Length: 306
Image (cartoon, rainbow, N blue to C red):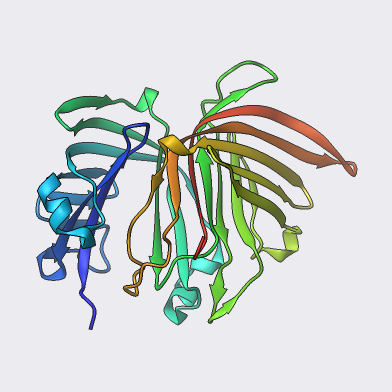
């Protein structure tokens, strides 16, 4: 028998990085079914439009409870959530495939570009969060286990190298790894989308009629994690090269929904940086739409047993 619980995970990146965990038995959690999201556990709440909560973990608790997988510290937050651009991955997350429990891991990014507003207090210091100065993101994963390898990149902090201007209505996202369908692992697959100034460019292997193909490589050096991703369809191509400094990254700690902890080196950060190139095919040739500098890149990479 395994325990059933809700874990609230709050973290922060940088050289003084950390992650704080708070646990609730399922008997103390409220999440109405077949209604809009409204999860409540103690003073922690999560809805589509607001996040509130607090965590406090002492050094003594960390030493006494290694199973909490937590650092020491305290955080409080009250954030209003404005989801501006969504990424719907397609029929793979449809009601039919969810009912069949077809995939080992499902993914949906309702807030691929999200504006947050409110405040966060971290270890006694308060930070104001404003929509015009944040590059927010919100998604959900669910199922029985996580994918391996695990790859994720996303950013709305984009500046065009062609014009020198910041792109106010753009965001890209790449995610996946090696999905399992009805227990069978597919070859290395990623889903991707670039919402470029109001135009959608999707790279989705499940929509085979678009000719979607993906090539990616993730490597670890002594100081950085590096991602290289190229995605193409009959219509468009996206080339992404991102780096992130390991000294600013977290190694995320949590169990899979089935109760096992298989990811032991799952790197995570929001301080990635690099470039994104977007092309469109016209009369059989690739034409560059834009060459962009990407900052504040949300990034993850990990493999079982790595």
